[in-house]
Length: 455
Image (cartoon, rainbow, N blue to C red):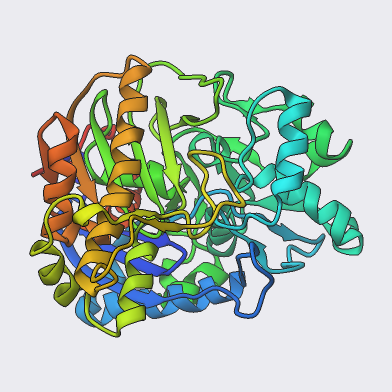
């Protein structure tokens, strides 16, 4: 989309993910990418199985690194920055005290240590609550770390916490909030009954819900320092609401109206499409998310995606390109070798304690090419099943758009095309979440609404 008449300058999008932070700077009139940057992140090592955590301070350090790359590529853009938007990994629980200081590391979307709390809440609320959602994390914290729970004054999602550092404002938006387990996606407000199941005071800990794509504040001193900007940016540069990474990815992939389905091949695999109505799936397989433009975003998330391929790569000490070349020589079906890729448990189907399996092993099949293709086929089968679930919900899917790091693999794209029954397009910009955050930031200071991405 283009900017409104007279809008000049640039807009910054940040995507705070599990494996790293990505930054994209776009021209405010054309939405063309001016510069980009990246910095890695990792999980806290040595935790018990099922636990997955990160320190928010590490997100801040990675933001500094990614944005430094941007300013190195476009040094004069600092003076013309108009706005910032933040995309964040969903479901993470950032708990802060009365001084807005982080109490403990954030438990992440891929943390399955809360399976028992998730099952308990699901039974009590009579609807499925995945272990990865925020609600069971809070119940887990209350029971396992009562001293920490007693200090909690605000519960934030990862992108909310970044916005707090940028502006001092405590707020969220419906898209990211709908991945907590205690949000009503139809009414677009906090679910007081679900919150009471966690704690009678839980509703007091939550941020206000801002309008989609609105401005939640201006950069303050902390924000200027975090982004490496001159003091003149303080109070001048706007910060939009931002949103969850899937919501921002939908904007970045141009999925802002019904029709296209987006498949994201990253640490997790997500499949989603925009809908004009909420989709409440009694099985819980389809998450009834809101998007970040005022619509809904029915979504299916599978915990196991590119990490399965990385396990095979590490086992043989080869490159993904080399393994892909070997896998291409293996016939479809891998001579009977099948890989069930539930290495981290799984969300869809809801099997948080599941493990991966190899079946059909015969002489000569435990080779790099066979194992890599079996991993590709196993994850692809999960993705194809997810798309069919969306179709079964009467959602019109006209095209498939592929995003994420895994979409660069040509063999994987071919396997997905074979199973889709719809045209498959590779989105040119791989970092759609960061791009979507930048486009939302641009829209927040432009008189025009988000309608898509200019090709």
